Length: 207
Image (cartoon, rainbow, N blue to C red; front, side, top):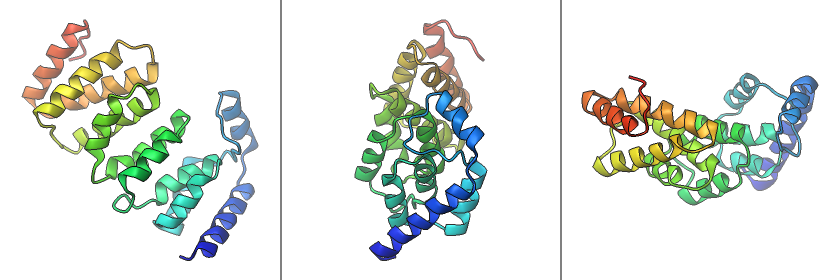
């Protein structure tokens, strides 16, 4: 798709959002502190339907992400082909993510499917930024659910960072870390024992 075609398509997509605007949902999000320049209140289901209609498109995803519009950013994470986005662009998107909704949508729609998903996840859980940590734990949860077992270094890094997160004060990160620990334990008996032993250190017993 040529540059002008991409720009025209983005304009067309934005116009379609105006037609499905849900003022009540949009206002509710603003009341809860969402920090979008524009928020049309479209449901995730509507955005998934739009993504299925359009199909994956790297250039379109890049252009949509640039817009400070809730629906554009979420749609960008749905349209971006995981095998085409490079680590540097992922880093840029992560740095430009400023709220939990976009962080989680990017994780579930895109980051968990990256060829280098595990590498990014371990990098993010060690970050001082809560949204980075949130994405990292969510990605690891999905990878563990798929049966992807970490190597010894990965095990040690995950357990260390999970314990730090579980003793922190960010509730969303704590919840994500505990969920990841549960999925880690589901990988098998050895992993369950490691998880139990780690959680015992901070007096948590969930097994």
